[in-house]
Length: 314
Image (tube, rainbow, N blue to C red):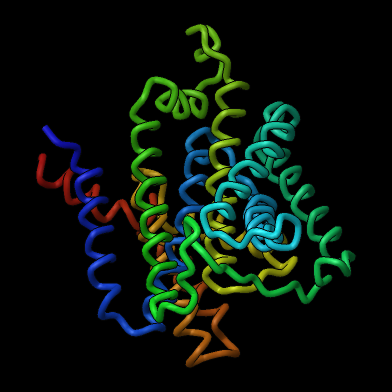
């Protein structure tokens, strides 16, 4: 019997690809940004399942963006695939090293320590005049697999396709991981680490592995965002950016790999239209939305679908 989540994910991705050919440019951009955010939050729900909340995932989001943005500066290459690969390698390497320290901490200590590393990067980038300081710099993507698509007239759509495919692939692989024996241990670590140790598994290693996976996803999301908007700056590592990812994680819920993209789409849409029509009170509107969801849907937006399933089974 086919997996319903994977089937629905594939259908949703195919729908986006087809509709992208007729959607206006502003809608394509909005969906692209939502997919970038959703890719980052996909990694956040993996940490949340182990009972951890990172207030510093802007670190890897920013590293992914800067690794993509500086590929032409340092390597002389402006190929989209190369940018994504450098983001994966850099974030995987740094998160693997920091994971040895972070896996020793839990609760607020994990959250604040991750925030500290994120703010260190923000400070370093802000003081680096070579990388544009607080203003950042523009990112140019010229080719994909060596093909120059910039002058084809479909540059925006091609970036949209790559973003959609990457988000679908990450969602697909994450679902398979969560269904595996190692992936299922995340919930066990959250409930009782001692029992996990008695089963012969290492809670620290599980957290370390999940932390690296979530960092790579954040780096991918950052690289895709840099390529999509064509600009990067140190604000991508600031604590408010990490706070947005936590905001979406809580709002969306952690019960499905599709939840982050659903929550990101709602967050991006509300923020964009609120900022457009109420620039002085858009934060109030976002806060009100969050408050309503917490009160009526404490398990996140995705609980709307799980509740229907429960009612049907009854």
